[in-house]
Figure 1 (cartoon, rainbow, N blue to C red):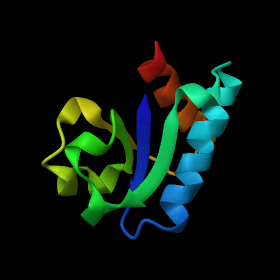
Figure 2 (tube, rainbow, N blue to C red; figure 1 turned 90 degrees about the horizontal axis):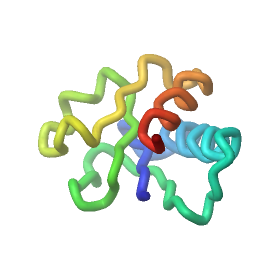
Figure 3 (cartoon, rainbow, N blue to C red; figure 1 turned 180 degrees about the vertical axis):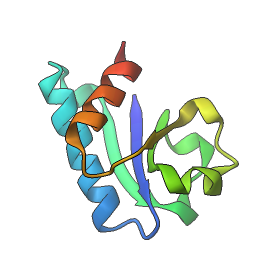
Length: 92
């Protein structure tokens, strides 16, 4: 499964979310080598680059070319528990 964290500039925020996704996968007992987790900026996103895109809720409308079911909008990008809940939902 490919997961990409997306933020406006593709630097700090998306990297932090990427790290939280990896931690969530580990906490949920998943083998990280079964997943490809990365981060990028809004302008570089294409539909075929991932199965799921984790984004800040306010950016959701900017990714209108991505199917809704692939977008995982976060209310708080710094809330590791929210990331963990969303990760758990997609791996079930």
